[in-house]
Length: 69
Image 1 (tube, rainbow, N blue to C red):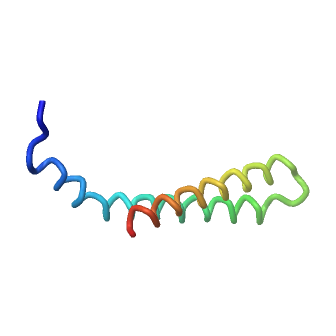
Image 2: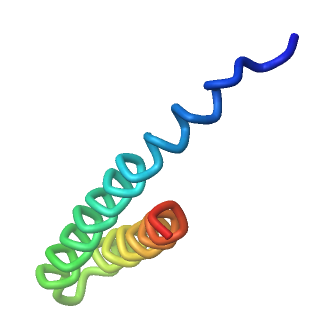
């Protein structure tokens, strides 16, 4: 089945919204990583959560950057 002529237009219009969504999610995870690291003290489990949230924040930020570019 051949794609409709306007099928690609909807994805082009949604790219900025998707990039903004990923950027906001990245900020939320970065905030979570900061709070987890700030309250971690000497507990290894909390540092693992902070590291995981930081990795997710960086990953989502790269996706947002590529989408908004």
